[in-house]
Image (cartoon, rainbow over all chains, first blue to last red):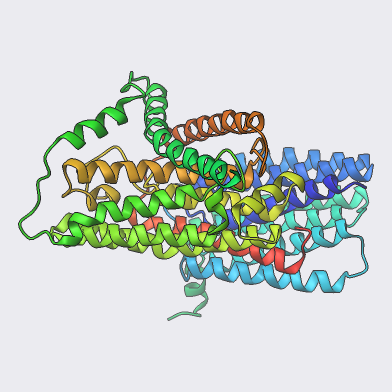
Length: 220
Length: 317
């Protein structure tokens, strides 16, 4: 495998980490959904490139699923849902942008150190791709923790799942059946969460999850 | 003889940046106007503005100190020296061995320091606001710039711009860290030159202005020198981005006139592309609120830090 192929793969995986940071930074609803679509687009490009350099045609199907499902269908559906919920206002971020970004940097550093030490004997392509994928997963978790709005928590969850797909394709081989079932489980999760969103709104008149804490009596 | 040729090349470079800077500004303004479907001023208008300002008399405030009068020349000198250090059409020019990317950052930083001082000198409210905002932005833009310099230096093994450019030509590969550094440097360049998402270069009286607020009290030849310095700074940043990330066509050290000509033509091409992209970007984005700018510049700092981090962990990024 020549060096350029690995460089392009790194570039795309690094691009995903960068778009994850954009997700953390973005505080407007529609902007967030657009960035999420970009995240999925970079993911599908990355998977397609892996399919090309690994000579694994089934990965093209994965890339196609990522493109159609996550870059088009889910963002459009979320977009409509946001319009129907009537939440075009700014998202609040707990702790402010700066500390969140710094924390994200720390997570990237952590995943780099952990992955590059743990997989010292693996081939360089998988190694550094895995490190990037772990950072995407951790950044997705961070996003779910820092956001209070339920819709942006969904976006965080979906970006986390994108990181899992990236890890699976970089590690040479996730069976297609697994991939398809993961894709559909995400879709099901999306539908279930969507239903929940409306239930939350009906019950509390907001999609701010702090209202749930108050209802459970955790906050007085 | 060799020394004389080197001095001639260096002198040509210094004259070139000085002559091209207003043209670049005029070209950017023209493209911007055309994109907005306006006719726009002619491309040579900045030269005429400078000539007109030089002929006009200087109006000084009663309480202006010596600093206010000498400030513009200090700012201009620092910016010009910094611009002379950047390989524009050829690498390994005579001055470029005396200072590196960090020294260029320091020169620009001292120019900014004097600009903030003279902004506050007369004691008007606008100047003070402009200076304090400029310093607020600088406190994030400068670390970002240093981080980017470190990222490039870790990769190329040198902070010397000539050596960096030669390394980039010979070892041209797609690197994640270089991509991060490029985006970061573009953000820093937009902020440093007071371009649109950070500051609006086209207005004079607006509450959110930064650069124009500091030079509001200036007139005549002082203003001309300051305008030329800011045009030079724009050229400097575009040249810097071009020589680090797109160093193709640069005449190598000690080459003949033919490759210098190629270098010159490719430099003109890079400047044109840079000015056009800048105008395109400025027309497609709105100015952001002043208190959002630290977030925007924080991204540049973060990108530089991330690039450096990746390079520390593994040199293959």
